[in-house]
Length: 157
Image (tube, rainbow, N blue to C red; front, side, top):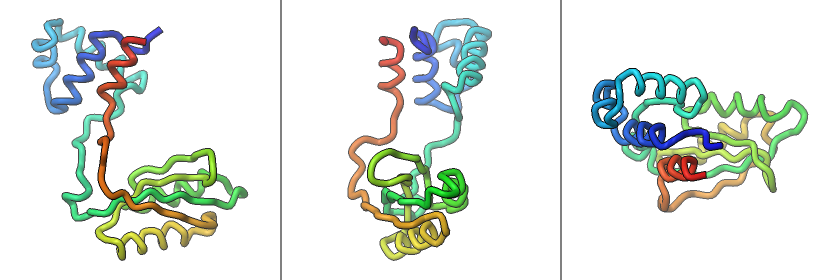
């Protein structure tokens, strides 16, 4: 059973394209009642399908022109949660995930330049729970974070 239907997908697409659009305008464009849009939206939010309406921010436009992926090996005693809390306190850490494979956590970080990246990495590894970090610098973005095609696939499956 699909988590969403065609109307949900159309609503999500519309909100992704125009996050500041109002409920009434959504209803007009989707050719459904305002109450239908509101009910669908409430359900999608309650189920965690829609998690926010914030603007997309380009770190480079804020002066953070370097993006890197940092793989961390951590001290297993004390666990991932403590290291996660440490990472959450570093503004340049945009996201972090516990992973399988050679490392324990992979974080996407940004920095103003390579020297600033060293500062960020030093801050990351300065925590006692982090044993080692290795990083790769992103040269160019090939596919921007997106969910539109995934929403369409969820309807089909």
